[in-house]
View 1: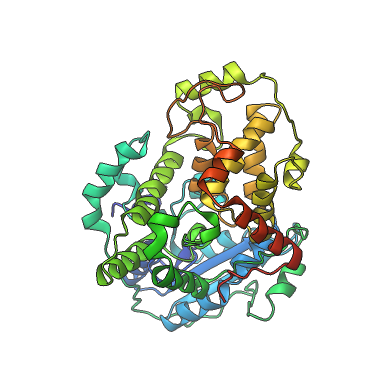
View 2: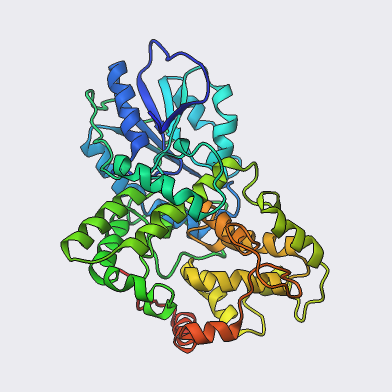
Length: 466
């Protein structure tokens, strides 16, 4: 129950046809605490369970890349729900004039609505606005974090403050999620607005939507539960052994590449942690560095997003960071680029251009180079606020792991969040600085440039998992 919050005080409908689980962020069947809780509610009500999932054309920066990645997950979700006796209705809102009230239509026959507790993007806004419009219970369940967000009831200001609290609670929560079992199978008809999605019609469906068709699907990542499982298996078998030593070397490809699947809820961090821990024990490996990033750092980001009013603004920065930004906001820049120049990777810096091209092509930038990417946007933007808006825009539009608590935390880290003051310099003030020469000393820049040039020239990624 630490994961469960009721956001209104309505009573369940007495003559309902089903319990409704609205899958907003955790778009999976396995290891889903929200789906498990919805099944419990359905069993208590002696009703079948119906899962509702939708993709609309009207979310910010809706485009082919994001639509495709989400749609690629739908067929497997439907198969796994059907195998468990759970109903599944999927709605693709293609045009802006199409109806946008399907949730409320389904709620009219539901005993209760259960959905995902998520602290950013559309789910955060939905969970603020929808509960008061329903005449049945509206319940949100945290199925994104390993340690429930509610147990960290105040904002933590750094990894060193949250780490002991997470580690103290981990033994209780680092265990498999409850199995999803329903007593009454779904036997009803699906509504007319249900959209059939198959592996073969995804491109056609995407083309029929009123969205931005200029952002093409990733050349490196396919969406869906099966691909998430493949990435996890490949990581533990081929990368975990060298992760600690090579994780900050982008050309080594030692990271898990699971962030897109974690963001879209196609796999749970809990599953990843359990699989990594089991593999490490079996093969006598030390996985502490990876689990630190997956659990402590990720849950610090969720804690931040949950406890601040706006995780996309400078308001949440520490005082020293806001003070130094204000002091140096009007410093002279040696280079100044527009948002469009950044977007097209048209700067004087070949490494920065390569990181931006990686985002354009793969839909993801290696975490270590993404820090450099963000720091240089600060250095070359007319103001710090403009730099912030540029980073958020580029992530929201192009990154498969954007619009996420980790995204906003990592961006604001460039401006001092969860960091400390450094020696003062122009533009940055006491914010941490990163240089091209530093990247050349610490990483194989030339190998990375060759790799991104290959991606740009051929449109094919030799590191793509099939």
